[in-house]
Image (cartoon, rainbow, N blue to C red):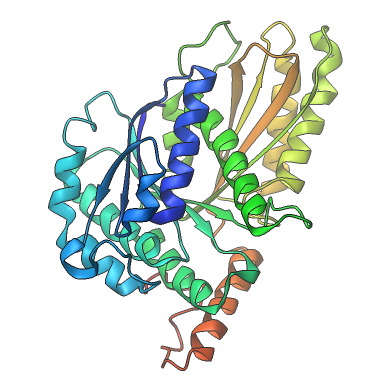
Amino acid sequence: MKVVLIGVGQAGGKVTQSLVEFDYDMGFDAVRGALAVNTARADLQNLDIDTALIGQDRVKGHGVGGDNELGAQIMQENATEVLDELDGRITTEAEAIVVVAGLGGGTGSGGAPMLTRELKRIYEKPVYVLGVLPGRDEGGLYQANAGRSLKTAVREADSLLLVDNDAWRGSGDSVGEGFDRVNDAISQRVGLLLASGEAVEGVGESVVDSSEIINTLRGGGIASIGYASAQASEDPGENVNTITSVTRKALLTSMSLPNAVEADSALLVVAGDPQRLSRKGVERARRWVEDETGSMEVRGGDFPLASEKIASLVVLSGVERSARVDEFMERAREAADAQGGTTDPDEFTNEELDGLF
């Protein structure tokens, strides 16, 4: 699936660079262009991808200080400049655009939904948001920002692929180590998803292509992604149970939005050496995902990849009614109240998804 990535804000820029590096190192060539956009000059200086500094007349290159309403205003005022930077990058070859952002900071949480709105106004191809929720320890401002941004991004994007920062952080990680671990997990999972259906060595029995990714996400709302792998036997018949086992692990213990299993639709991608993959195992795992998620729309296939391991990638779409999202939105509402602001009673409920602008 050929995509153009646009990182907005500090976290968005770092995750975008991580995705670009993973795609390059693996030789997938799924990422056909990348740009990092920020209001803070310092956050762009250590990135190796192309960058665009916006809002200099408002904040002088110093960022928006966590003010996501200001972040949204600056993105709206500079949308033409950003779109000019993207001119020539978003070609007919690109099948989708992915806006990447941390939903807790000011520029990312405010700017990403606004940029998504502008992109959808101009381009007919899908525009997805890859959004990262702040961890519990990142402060009330970030929780409140993310609550508003999440609801707005869901409304504006064709689908919001959501990552809970607490999902993949180790208990003993420092803040920096935690961010690095999350970035690595995102790049591996999302990188493999985007590479599905690209031209790779080997011929699978039922290869997933980009249309199946697009159709899985077509219903909109919030999506989640999980991954797990295990050593494969040389005999494909012995890998039937292995495929089922790694699929169970991916769905039950490794999703980017934990404990959100019920879904409107799902996609299962089983990656590995075509000589070791069992079609029976893939179909059995797909039926298990169908039973576990309660969805009658579960697509499944394989991704030929030179490896001695077998990996399962699970994408769930339509998980916004999960208890995990409800729990986060309640935390965001409490954070907004603690800041002393007046809050619309419905602003942080998980019923009507709107909020930032």
